[in-house]
Amino acid sequence: MLKTLHTLLLLCLVGAGNALYKQWIPDNNYENKTNWDKGAVPCGNDRVQFSAQRKVSVFVETTHAVREMRMPVDGEFILNSGAGFYVVAGQEPGCGAGVTTKFKNSESLQWFNPALWQAAATLDDMQRENFLFSVHEESVPCQYDDVVFKARSSFRVDTSSSLPSISVKSVSVLGKTFDSGSEFTQYLSSRSGRLQFHGSSAVTVGNSGCVDPSGCDCGNSVNHQQICASVTCPSLSCKKPLLPVGHCCDVCGAIVTIHYAPGFNLQNYRQRIRHLFLVLPQYKSIQLGMSKVFKSQRLVGIIPFGSSAEIQVVILDEEKGTQAEALARDIVRDANSHGSNLGITEAEFQTSTGSSSDQSGSSAGMVVGVVFGVLIMITLIIVLVVLIRKGVVQMPSMPSLPSLSSFRNNNDTGDLGGPLDHGFDNPMFDKPVMLPAVPGLYGTETNNSISLTPTGVHFVNPVYDENETDFNV
Ligand SMILES: *[C@@H]1O[C@H](CO)[C@@H](O)[C@H](O)[C@H]1NC(C)=O
Image (cartoon, rainbow, N blue to C red; front, side, top):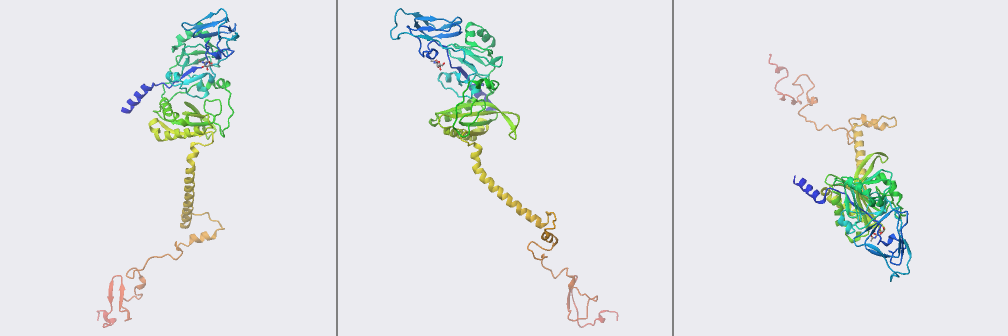
């Protein structure tokens, strides 16, 4: 009872949800120099151009001087308070001779491009840039995630996909969070909404979020092809590259697979691994992603018969991959010693160097196994030989084996090969040979003076004649 209460309290503290915050990286900010084709924010001597046909929503943070500006037909400036434009007469000092600068095209930036998102467990982590690594499918917002577009910025995202809608838990735009479906639909049909979101699929909010403490399936496997279409896989140098579930590319590193029981909490476990291991200096170059995945189960390794949920921990190491293996071993060791408290029933790992937890256990196990195998074989052979010799087990009679039948038939031949020993003879009993063979008990032979019979000891008095023993005179 106390334990249940404790668990409930813990759930309340961490929040039942295991959703992540996914933040869109690009922005359409006037002050971001990556948005300009000359790689610099235009100054007072420059001519600024927005393509006439392009729809664009631009966020302007401060005041800017310009020589000239061409505006798009359908577009907007979202001005921060105090922001604006002015034209300088003459040359602005320190601005050069003046060039024509174009605002870059953000038309092709796709919602399903995993490189355009960053993930964090909390908004606080997001602020501190404590970003989480994820497999490609989960880099893109999952069905229970909170989607964040940076507060002081605008953007344009292409939401085209094969499905009619993309559903998430909530969407934050310009610092306002939408988690009710109708409100967000209204925003999408506003001027800003139409300029920021375009494409065939509608983004919908209001999903309940993940209420399973052990984590939830991201749900992006249906978009796998589209997600991977924008990913270019690097060439790898490791011996046995691994393919994590939900990832588009083979990787060098390690994968830890965790089987969990009720009581497992993904978010707590993620924190535990971070505080126990990822803070250590030797694991500085490590990227670690942890999530619940569904792995298809195969009968005899071939025939699929369903899927099972497990926790996949993907560990990538920028430096060669040796640290990834060390961390995988640390995590499995921790899971083995504290598993019962953490709700972990089993943990195993594979690495791209070819080693795995199965293999490391078997080097000692194999020796023991071989020794036991040999012992069992020897015992079986001995038992079989003894049974055959005792006649308990009958060998099929084969004419070519006459020696065996001679073994069986000579029942008086004991184990030692000699005649069977029947023990010692007690001369007092059961020796009929000792009884006189003659019918007359008292025989004439005087040397038979004492004879032993089963009924008693009789002696013959030599004084009496044999005939006088009858008292019939
Ligand atoms: C400018 O845009 C780039 C690419 O879109 C982005 O990575 C970067 O964070 C932005 N800079 C700022 C200060 O937001």
